[in-house]
Length: 243
Image 1: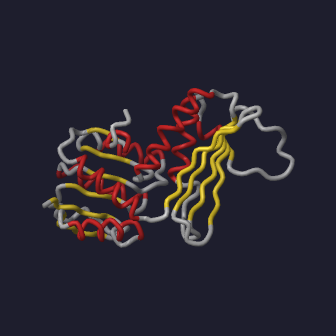
Image 2: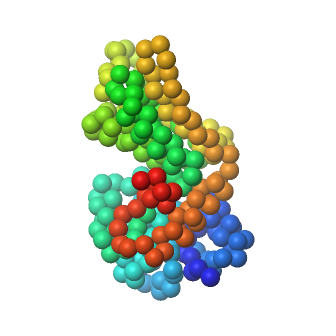
């Protein structure tokens, strides 16, 4: 039986992960809160999943690195300094960072990359994401990742190319822009659409999630895969064999 620890296990996604893991009978599950200090705790785990908050990721990564425990991180919104700290820990343990655990979303990442490479900058790229009214960060980690993928294929700096909404007399759209737009309302689990708009034609790539269980199952799949992997930085595309 796999000893699994879920950091942020009392949040919406954390609860889903714990529920599905316990129901499977394949895991011995322990839980810590989003802001709980793990420095002095005994880490008798085979693998850990973090779905807490950015600083919480840094905290549990340090704990896992000290004890050689592989770590899956689904938290988003990390600063550059926090990501640098995580990469340092990834030199000591297998660490997987994913803005979205859904198999479908990670296929969307792959399709977006291929589509952007084939179409080129002649097709304007815009991203629209929808989430529930309680979501704290904007844009979503998934939308940002989609933007980063497009920026990379076009040799752009995402932070400079991203255009978060438009208002007023903003002028003509520049070729170097990547539109990123967030909608919040109700109990929408998560929807992402990437638009590639050219002259006379348009391609839309869309993923819709109807249950948070989709993400929980993906997180557990990632955790199972990460056990036994050498130290390093991993993504869901590694788990899914997408190269």
